[in-house]
Length: 142
Image: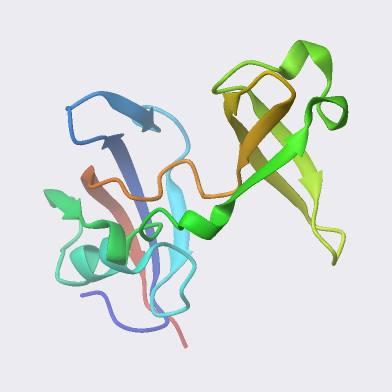
């Protein structure tokens, strides 16, 4: 049984609302997390909580329990000169540092005549996510 403090290892395939696979670790190293420690998104952790060893389950996670809704304040318009010429294309990922020095991923949302709109939202924000999960190990925590 999975309790707070349990170390859970699982395989997963993550799909978007259209069933397109975003990511999978099936056949690779399982994900490991400590249950109740907020190491994974809350909707996924809630779905895994009732699972047993070797159980397989499909868990649907709404944006509010995943990466949140798209924040309209997460878009910033900057002069083209602030974005490398080769990166001035919608969808291009860029990295930047926040005020604390942490690296963050941003995306080019739109390219206008003199400016570029950058999207600081998580790439999965606003999306309903489907996880196909198999719990492969449960170690009881202390």
